[in-house]
Length: 185
Image (cartoon, rainbow, N blue to C red; front, side):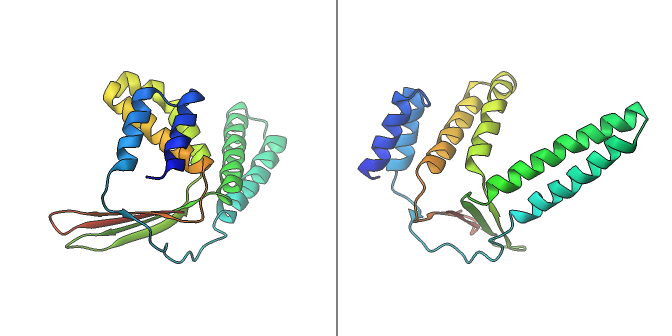
């Protein structure tokens, strides 16, 4: 772990974005030697994949606006407004995804098919969603799950606040021969 990473975590504590306990856990995770190493990320074939949800949102927005102007039934009007809100969310997610780091996940089981996918990960949007879910998780799953959720949120914020040209690579090898390779960047 570099001094810059420690300093960044301490700044997050000073800003009130992390508690002392969360910072301790985060520093412990960052200080662990293990399978985290620098590796070249896989080739990104769909660099402009953000355009898919963006254009789908624009098309849905146009259709919903057309339905709102034509429909006279109150139930269809409600459905058209729901479609309009969903279209706006698709447009926002698509637009934010163009600058987001990519998540590449490769699951290599000992037996069975391999799974590999790559997608943009809007870290700021994901951290916002976790912040919204935090009170619900706290009530339903207990304090331990809420602690892990807060730690995940702080990791996403750290990734968003400190962009790097170097990807983060994590390799997890199971005793059974299964392997998971995660690349962020």
